[in-house]
Amino acid sequence: MNNPTSQPVSQHQIPHGTKRVIIFDTNAYRKITAKTTLTDCRAKALRLRQCEQASRVFVLASPTVIWELAAHLADSKDPGFEHCLNSLVVLGEHAVNPNKPQGGINLFPDADSTVCHELFHLLPPKHEQGIQNLGSLVKYIVKNAPNITDLTARKNINQIATNVAATEQQWLRLMQTVLVHCDPNVAKKFFGNTSDSKVRKQVRDFFASRVFMNMWAKFMVEIHAAKVGKTISSSDELRDKVKAMLEAFPVPFHLMSVLLRKMAVDKSFNLSSPNKKRWNFVWDSQLAFSIGLSHEIAGSPVFFVTGDGEVREAAKAARCDNRVLSLDDYLRSIGFP
Image 1 (spheres, rainbow, N blue to C red):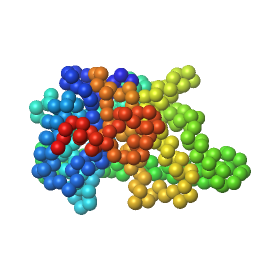
Image 2 (tube, rainbow, N blue to C red):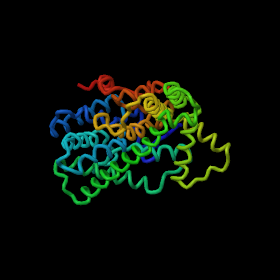
Image 3 (cartoon, rainbow, N blue to C red):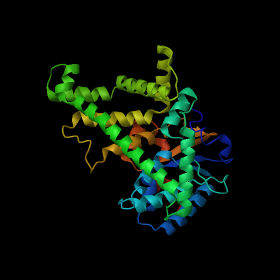
């Protein structure tokens, strides 16, 4: 994959001599803004950007990260309101677009756009406009925080919060169905009438298999083909698209495999636990599409900054761990104080 991010970032926007393209995950922004005032956050973002420019680093913001942070701004009583507001301000200052004097940020495409562009060279309808609107919202927040009073901005924030909650609930329903099928009494219908422990191991081994990876990739190809109105015309084309999907985006598949293996063997696995917040997996999975050995823009490799252990392990399993950096390691690499 030569250029997974041709929309909305184009080749000519990448400064000549760029050595690395960097994307922060949500927790990287939360970590860098923890226990920090808004004023100090703005100053920190400026110093960070100066260090990155000196190190020839180009920064992209992920729409997924913006959605996660903005969802906490719908209610001023949300415990994460101030922290997420500060994090969004830093994101906006961090990924500022130097080609837009009036403000604006450089955005990496969302997961759907990334996959659709890679497989079909098309973008889902209205996605590009939606991403541009997201950039305008961040621009407004950067300029006006902490006073987020504009009615259009409030409406957009409320819509994001609604969409985020709906996406998480939809994922929980899907995974609850999978969890039911992991129950030995159900799984024995597929794997044979054996002991509970043995059938759990068989389910776990299935989720670790290439057969499962291909089945899940086939499902993902068909879902994204529908998003852009494409019809897979033959079994050969489907096989080629599945191969392309797994080669370009191995990390989210390894991430899903690990989760399902845990669900298969853990008798007390609780998807709805407020302590574990398993629903955050849906956002980790989307962000994982940002990681890949072939991900580059105008010849500059794309790196993902995260402290998430499961994402890092999935990247390692996919042999992409050299494209994943911890926040501390990244900051040291650019000489950030």
